[in-house]
Length: 155
Image (cartoon, rainbow, N blue to C red; front, side, top):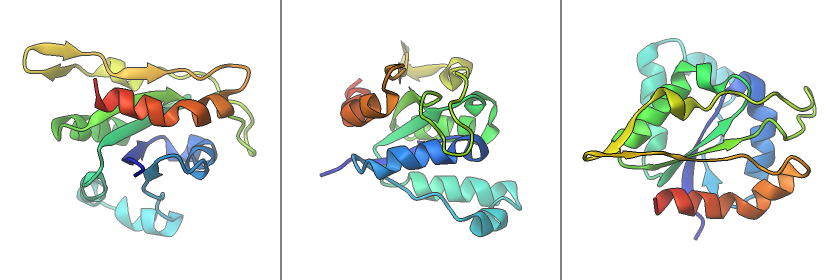
């Protein structure tokens, strides 16, 4: 059975890259909301938090797809914190080397996990972060995504 994950990413910059990963069909992740629905959700901070909280339910891992500005997005940071508080695994994957049909290749962004401290009891945990092969990032992700998620869950 495929793992149930929550994808966290910067929608405006990276949705086309994220769709490439979703279309691989290797793990089950929620579909992004439509632009019209998102306009309704984002009208209030509570609306966004409620949507995130609801969509994290039943997921075993938060997969942060890291683009050029992902680390600056407050809702990405909220998603990471919420997932960790709920005992979910977290893993990061740099996606700047995936070719976006609209914008081409991206630039490597900062790791959003660097802004937070992850602890289990007194032990500090360093979340796993993967940077796909520069020559063929798409196939590297396709080949390894399930393993990377499992590595995070077993960490």
